[in-house]
Image (cartoon, rainbow, N blue to C red):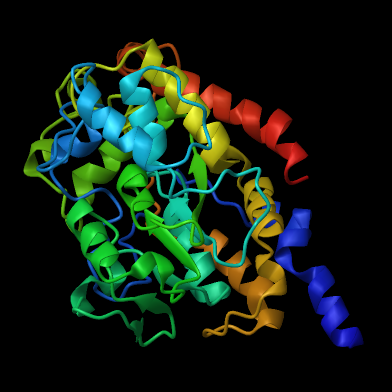
Length: 384
């Protein structure tokens, strides 16, 4: 018992110095492919087309917020479900809230039937967090790794390294729809789901018992856009890789149709095409605040500790390849050798490229500042 107690004290989530010493700046680590998936396509960037994380943001079968002309459809949706958010009278907003009913309110008490859903924003430390959850904690994940074993029934796939995954593909809307058809949301097979498709994933939880619990890591959007560009120049293993990036420099990227365009606001509001306005930013802020436990990549250690406290991971033996007593060592190793890390040149703040990207991502920057407010001032009331 004494040995277990000592191990628990040493456990890295509660050892600030060890965790902070383990954190690694992506600018000083060696450039590498993702290593944890042993040949699986990484596919953590939405896989529809290169415009998905750029200017166009169109995908086949996807829909932006309905227009005010869709009153009849809106009324049908609004009348079918109960409201956690009071109707606003704005058709597209009320429809969005109804479609997000699959996510629990982050301030509501955690229920045993709730499934943690990591909203993966590319180049925000999410791949490292996934490795920690799947390998160090031994959680059974539902992301894209099970795509090679997708069938007409759900099952758990175990890789050679002991990591376990549900045989679904959460990296695109079609894969999520197939998972829904198989009843994944109520299956209880996964300990965590990982996806960039925030809106589509809500549809997996279509009853009053099983809900998704969103958590996310956010990063300064201009630095994230720069990181994304340099990653895409080399990431031949990604489905979204294109030779178009190879010939570009960062200045050309910043003025091109492929550069970031308020990715976070678009995904939270399902405004996947067309322009983004102040009303979308306001809605994205409200969605993030009510539906997601927020972490900040620049404060990675405190973010992971908050996720752990909220979900109680450190108290759960998920099984998997690493014992509970060895989790701390595993987490330190993952942070010291981050998966999918990609060093790149920095862009001067307030320089020409920085300001060009800022013009395109001003709504995401405002959302990021709101996320920092939530992390440091608001959600401390939910989780210290």
